Length: 291
Image: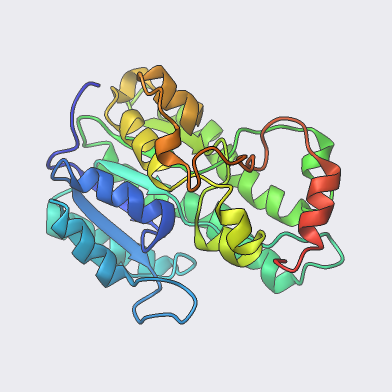
């Protein structure tokens, strides 16, 4: 690893819980400045934590935290969030585009309100946050943009039955392709990271099969550890990649992956967009009680 994240300023979209918060906590262990953007300012009956409780945890872990209430679909709020970050910490070194919206349904079953939400939060917010942060990233000694986005696989199976979601997630992936090429000469690293397996988050619990599915997942910490490995690399030598969390950690010497399993020894649920589409499993998922 080229450096730690001490005193680096990292802005995370959707950092209230799950993967986003785990990334913030991992950075906090180095003494990073962590900015949490999100909408949850009051406790939610079905979702743990708020942006303020996440900030408290980050500070307890050794970092400096700033929580900014922000709707990622609102240009003015996003501009204000970036301005507050720069005012508080003097700049931005890292942007993590983690926020995502998911609705797994086919064309006829997807209301346009859901379609718009996914494209606004996934593709548009990724582009907007990157656009707003880049003037500050260009001033950093080791600037990174990391998107929680999948490698692009044009197998038609990934579009069958989940076209709106696939389009929205691949929009994030296309941002990685374009931005990494556009800003390579300026030394800004733009990469994607995607989990090899399902990750135990609220989305899995509420949409993808409930507690039984959660037990077939890995903990968010595996994505956070892989993120750390990427963000501590030299930005001029690491860009345009579509990383898989377990592969990143294996390359760094990790051999014990049971430490990340919710239930060590149990079969793991593969994530979307990796390998060949399992039509039977996808159909069962889309028609389960979790949908």
